[in-house]
Image 1 (cartoon, protein in one colour):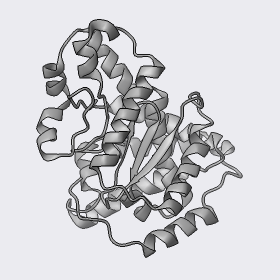
Image 2: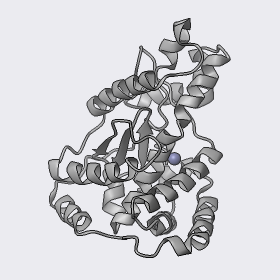
Image 3: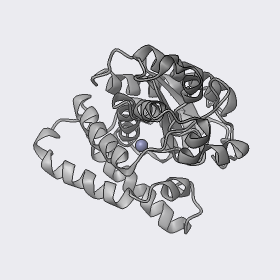
Image 4: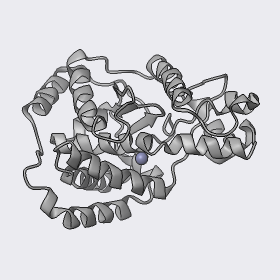
Length: 275
Ligand SMILES: [Zn+2]
């Protein structure tokens, strides 16, 4: 998923690297993790975080359960909840995944939330934002072009920009990146014992909400940024059909998820936000 108009596709560190020819070429895992740590510090300082120990513990447990069965199980994964009812999620390099409260509010079972987490985890597993940084670095272009490529410069004025090394840069995932993240996320869920059908039902729910709200609902930011959503739904339907024999016995929901939902309903409303 993307976080439209916000911190989505984080690619900070580019500026620092561009300025220091020292890190030309590939970005090491250590550098990637450092970028993620710095970005996470900015996110935690600049976005309203839910900071509810019970809910954070559940989301972390579910996220770790999925991430630890991927090819990047060695990363130190972190999962946070942003206190915004806008339906979205995003990932920083190095294993920092954030989900907005709106996803928890709108998910009906664990499979639906896991679908969002599994997708974001796959963006990190595939190092998609890191690869973008490497490409920009290797072509030796500076921050100005990064601005042009990613629209971050328009965004930063209105938003809580994440800065590392004095500059914020957001990678822009391609439609192909999103499809890959869906496909990898689908398999991440199966490997974690979770039925990936929640990816489909959650997308369909977003579509319904968007149609009912006439483009002004909590899912609108998602659709303005994801013109390929209908195609992605078709792709997930195809995968569900092709993998039907792998889905037996996989779980769709847990008591822990429903306890989290009950806790969520007790909390004060999220602050109004356009992010
Ligand atoms: Zn995505």
